[in-house]
Length: 302
Length: 302
Image (cartoon, rainbow over all chains, first blue to last red; front, side, top):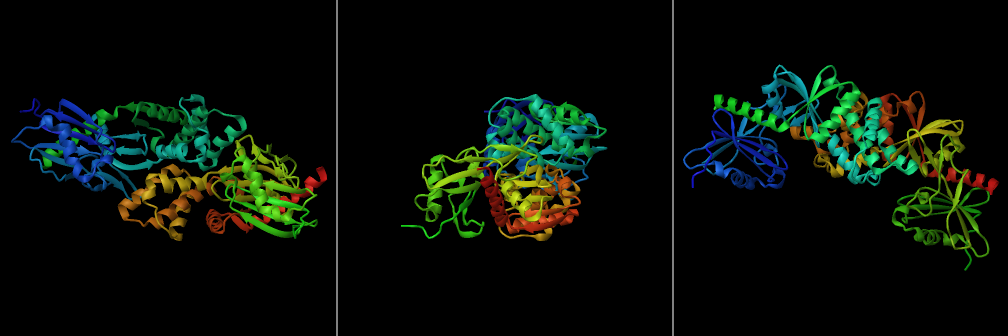
């Protein structure tokens, strides 16, 4: 059986928790798109090729090898094959590719390198492709913030990533609400916008988080503060501390926020309270733009 | 069988993980001492009296009721009976006692109240007795730091606790080393003093912890930094952030450090690097002094 779709190449965003692929034509138009929950986090190295083929086999025909340009945690040490880190300053997305070990003659998988920074030590894998997409679409200057388990702040100057910083805000929030003494105080669904704003304001005034966390528990003991207010304030304290600690990135510039819509809105509020400007961009579309840029550069160098 | 020891009263420090009791004579001399692992954390409310009797029954005779003055988490909501919080400013240790519900006629257990603070919201239970002991022994002015899972910083003016702040440093260290992505980077025993000092210095220069944590993982990926160095640096980052956030307590004063010897030495180093002065005091002896003060005040008001 022949496939209905004959892509010129395939764009692949393969992260920790899922895989997303686009069948692309010669003009970088999207012919088809697919998603799968086979994230890098669940796969042993030998399981990557079968997982990929399962997702894209409908796009592959006999007798030709389709280039697949991949970004994300697929290239981590715990992923398919480790793609190197390229040190900043660097033009993001696509001067270095690592060929994944495949046996199927219909694909050639090239994994985009991650980025590293010596001082302060930092690494990035996947986000560099969104930044490349932003540079391709909007020109080469900007500040980007990608909130998540590990937020990334990125400074882009004339198309070059000059520095970046990973903030463990999301993971610290998850740990504090799951494993710390605060877990008793922050259980439950719902959101309290005023309590969030209060937390942001406290952290902006005093970014030394350690001195503020315990008051969440104390307030619950002393005033019976609701768990929803406590959770919202904790979020505000953490995001406020992140914004306070990244002032040299966002001050006097517009920060481009990329991420899940609810989270991005919280960062927008916190930046606004701190006196910063922000705008929201669609991460999925930036990833695809970044993969297109990488493919164009790969074609030239291949 | 009659006991060999007839205490005038019993001093009791009953914390989360253990119980420590002293048989005291009329002149507040120590006749005997005992310890047990029956901490408040392992006991249901009805198990407190039997656990106490098991520890001190050798000091109890028929026909007389011995006063037991108790401090610590025994008076928490999850403890034997909730003793109230008294709001600062307050003279620590002993103006308010809560009688525990006992059935044995040989004991009368009085639990010392905890302390609270409205703004920023904070609570303390147990440490107030060490502060009272410090005030009794050394006069009524000072700054005290009690490192631990939740460090307490306390300001004492003319015998009155005027303010305090609980820092979640120890718990955040435990969470990051156990549950976060950093756990891979910090496993193993041992200590690297230079890496600790580097962490302190980084946090003093930039107390926004969230921006620094991830570099521990990045350094391991990029430079193969040892786990011992990573763990020591993480400790330095956290204690440095605590010291940076408590400058209004310790600047221009001598901080009295009370706690486990190894931990106290780390705080001594960090304070010294920040330009602060410190001295080390023995917590066990301060607890007993504080319980003596409380007993003397209880005698007057009883």
